[in-house]
Length: 433
Length: 143
Image 1: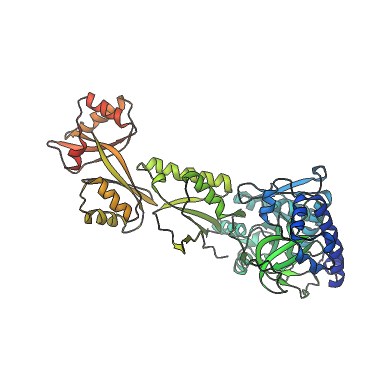
Image 2: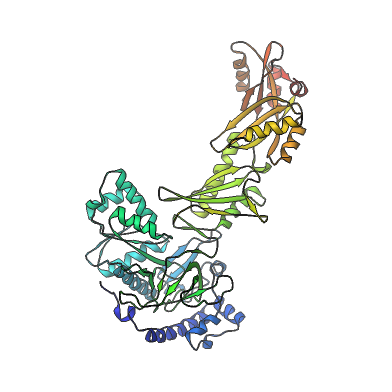
């Protein structure tokens, strides 16, 4: 199986660490010099770039959080002038304001290189027809995979998301062999094929690269069995780069993090202390080569474990396990980041008082569903059914606009949402993933 | 001329309606008329009772969401076209009926219908001007 860049991906660890140290020094230097937020944070923590003597010293530097990005919206975290930025992407944020990220020419080149590595590790070659069913737009998923696949020399179908019937027609007619989408959409496709009596054997699909949402090994087995493909996991987040931060090889024993471009750490999310190799905790990522948007110790809030033993594939790059959950209350619903506080704000606006609510997340026929249960009170209760229903659809509309996810609002009687120690449990996630 | 009506939010699950009637019944409140509007998730129960304030207080104590609104009780001749004529008067006066429901008791030879209007005063005026009898509130809750 091809390794896209064996010089880098199979580097001996001492050599890799020397490379990391040099890149890290220059990243800290650039971030400190060009981004006020980092200057202030370093100053508050009493550290300066020259305090980094060995890689372990990174632990003395402050974390960067999504809140920092929000406070510096839109361009405050950029380390280069906008005229050097050639691409802008964004992800959904906590308060309706998205997170904006930028890329220089070199950044896009690196991104493409890393996606090429990731896709090669999944077994994609120049002979493949890559069917990209992520939405093309502000999200990093589609464009990231698109350029990597092109660099490998594969034929790329920029299909975008939605319209399952057309997706299947194109798969049949254009003979798509590699599928890029969310794992839940892969199951939606499988359902559609089943409903239409189309055997997966009649398609040319042989491999799928799935990401943008958490999924389990059971789900992998189901996708593989029903679509007759190899299903490969990958990891990325727009704040750090997008897809291509890490990806599985065909041995499926963890996602190789491309350590010549990112330094991963695992911390205790409560104390912020760095945990020893192999321990489960929150993944923290530092970029080593990003020019426009360097990230120093970015708290991903994803819980995972790192394995440093070399992989049978020959790559020396550390492997991260499938993410096991979040250290905050963020939900990923249909690939969109949703924080309960966003819903709370909307309810506060319409009710004018602290709302009692609960989010019920479920997965029906492989699609995520969100139900928002709201306890009624006298200000939002009417004796006329018409007004009551208008109220419900008004809240639903607000949620769809601000959060980007369609929710069903259900009114419930007061005190029917269970409270524990005075505080209601805000989220019930019934998805088995 | 207006009647107090209490409306109660009821989740669509078993036993809730029974609970409402039990709570007010035990407080000695008697139901004069009722209507239930429902969706698959919830219902709005509207009641005319003999003691509206007491009913509202005991229900609130039990954690129900209760609103008090004012409606109008109209005497309707108990014969074909009786209701139709009243609705026609309202329509000609451009008064919108939000909802209506029938009263259990009769008032002499006539039936009684409870109306909820967007504009109560105008509705009463239009009805009385057309010789339609709007029943006093006390009379209805005491029926």
